[in-house]
Image (tube, rainbow, N blue to C red):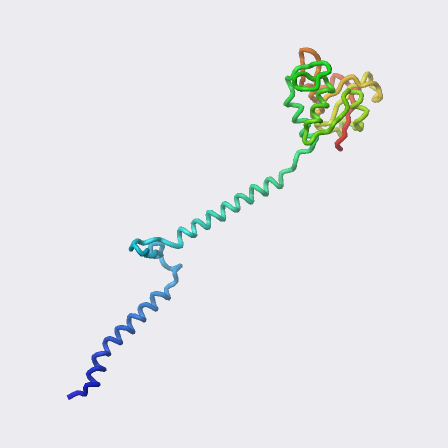
Length: 210
């Protein structure tokens, strides 16, 4: 008859083997790389028993976040690379917005301009503003003479009594490039964007910005 100790050992052997097999199976399952699982397999069970996919949604959000950051950086880089407009360029642009305003002798506002009132208004309201003299002759004396080749849109065009560059200045306009300017002309015509080539060699150019 077998000893009582032998019977107890034989009864526990199957139970020990089952526990060992279960532990081995669990170790094998844990060792499988998460990246090798399909999206359907990458799920977690919530306390309520529902499955919630993890990893894929988080990765998608991360990709969107990175793209958003890159887009913002690209916009900032573009703005930083864009050259800022000079005072002259802004002055030339402002003068064009006044085309069509009426002429008024002694006028210095959009309600009515004369030629030097227009140029004074444009310079005073461009960027932080530059105060210049009131009459065409005084503006000519204040500005530094330059050639047409060196003139930039926003500089001033002066009209003299004759071809002598030191002769009296009776008219002035805002240079727009080429042979074009914006000027307050006369009664009934107002502020115009016009060609000044009709004045021939009686015009000169001046600047106080470059």
